[in-house]
Image 1 (cartoon, rainbow over the protein chains, first blue to last red):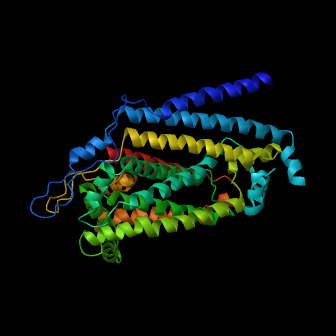
Image 2: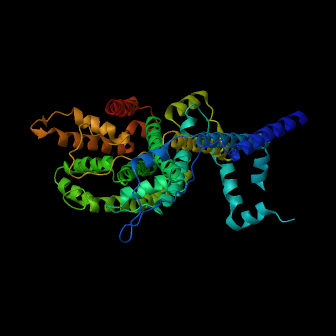
Image 3: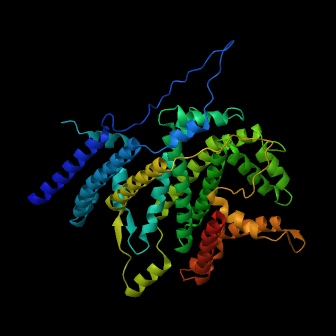
Length: 108
Length: 357
């Protein structure tokens, strides 16, 4: 029993550390541009409208970057951590069901 | 000590729901995997409902501004590309899951008494989800959307008697333009999601009322053995399983959104002729392929009209299957309707694949 609990805690600990590692991308390694771009418009004789977004800008926004891959890795680790925690709870609940705890609960 | 669980439970009746879920048994057999489709569908709809309003903050539904507003979302809005792509991929996966749910229900005969209305609400859901997908596809108002609107609104135009009226109603005039965009926008963000929410509500309520259906083959085997089909409680078994499925599905949606973000075609050029080989979105490719195979004339009637009426009649027949499959309703095996289900699935998959390539 003790060994099982230690194993669980170790799994959670390792996954938490991995998630924490991926939560904040290290500075300088991921060249993701700022999400809000300041558009500069040149005023020529009156009010200028917003600068037209070009196709290349749209394509650039779709490009895969190291920051995005990094974020994906973090997401999947978080998913794995959640599944691990759920599986622990699930096992406990199934055990409670097998020993008849829920039926007792329902009778009252 | 302040017991949060108890305090919340007392106020919203959580205990009652959990007790109900513990009491409710989910049959366990070799087809149990199909029970998870509904939960996945609901989760994908929730993703749509969460990302849709975020896009709505920036989207402008006018012919002049729609395209630029999508560009804005992609380039200038923080995480706009991601939200749009998650919306796009979750809607595509929702259509995949809704088809899987439909075919699995058809093949395991889950439409049998007393689940006829549940089946009909499911059919309505399939139609609404398809139109949600199609209307969303047209909103960027790019070249692809323009041709999709032209081709898509032409199809109901081929229906005898009401076709012309339906086409004009969808277009908001004789040709595709600003009115068409406004109509599809209203359908996509107002009418269809509201209809879908109501249908999902009724569908889920009916599923809870009648419980999970057990396939006739499983029932027969259990009866031969003189035993009941084993069941596991909805809570914890199904609830935790659904949660794990949703987490994996969420990971898949985000991964697809990051690796293959939703694109944007060139801006509409109203003077440009439709390029050769314009195709609808993947979920209508099976109809497109069937219509493509139709000869110009069939028994003196226009091939396209015959094709559309034929596809409509086949869909209506499948919609009414609980009332036609008498053998299943009597608890007997009905190989004819299993064959119809298998043929429908093969036609759908094969025509979609051929239409794609």
